[in-house]
Length: 90
Image 1 (spheres, rainbow, N blue to C red):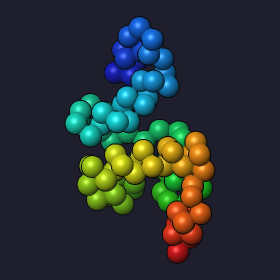
Image 2: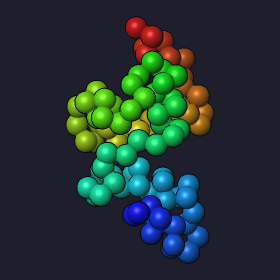
Image 3: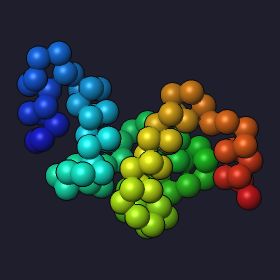
């Protein structure tokens, strides 16, 4: 519902609203915890849980969870660095 309202803003589509929500969840409870498609796909590829609540527990704090979601999204878009892939397999 909140994401749909965000897309009503001029120039903000689904992807932009999703990016905003991912970053804003650090300070806005309405968005926390948010893990969406790209981040969950990257988590699965790295043998991490592919569900929100286990990732929240794994991160250990709200700030770390938000950072983890951003990193997983980047990994989904750019591919994980070799060091990240190696560490995930240990």
